[in-house]
Image (cartoon, rainbow, N blue to C red; front, top):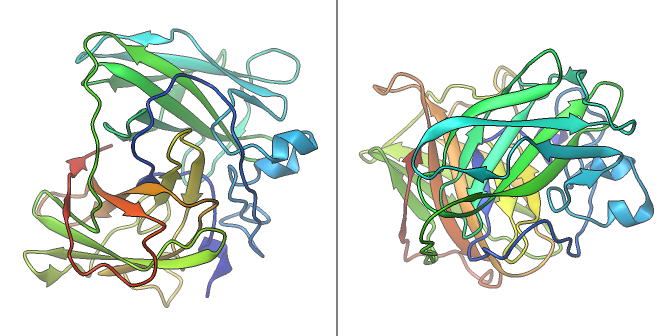
Length: 320
């Protein structure tokens, strides 16, 4: 098993996202931290909590999940504005402030990008994975459309030059009447004619192997293309507080042994029992001409005795 692809922190878009939490803000809750024997890419050691966050800061900081705090390890996520128009694409901008209080301008490339931005409403609707561009003064900007009203959590994943990879989070609001959603358990997702099936059980407190299988019209997809240096990305947001976890698949494109589909294998560590909404984003090289898509699942980690056989259909959406 290739430990270089086990547990890492950003990239995007295969994601596990916990459903049902739209409580306010930047509150901090309990967390876990775990290190794999080796890291993904150039990072030495794949840490669950923000892919290296545990190497910086105090003991108290290492107990925090990635993305629960807007400040960590001396770095602070500072959005230009915390409100956004609903249903309109407009710029969203922010800066990362360093220990000296000034905007950071030096970032290393991680998973093909210097900054990864995850946006999801607090009930886990509207998942997006975006890649802002930085101006010379350290201001990051990206076009953002929040299609429905509500409170949204934004996560930034980055590696300051000379420091550890860090995941920070804060809330922004889209005005209007808020109608929260709930998501029924589902292990099969359909998006744009593709079917993605999740097999394997998420066992709290253990490293759990899971497998995603991609088909189209019943035919296995065997020519997935790499997206952000992998065939898929897995992100988890824990129910209640949206604690952030990112996991990369076993193996890597071009390693001579990892096939480009139809199966993508992962190892994920789940800190506590509860509902997890899985969102799978893959760069698929079919008639859609390399469009990245997101498949979404809802999994209850307490239901881990036997694999599910009665598959529901998750809602899917094209992203990125």
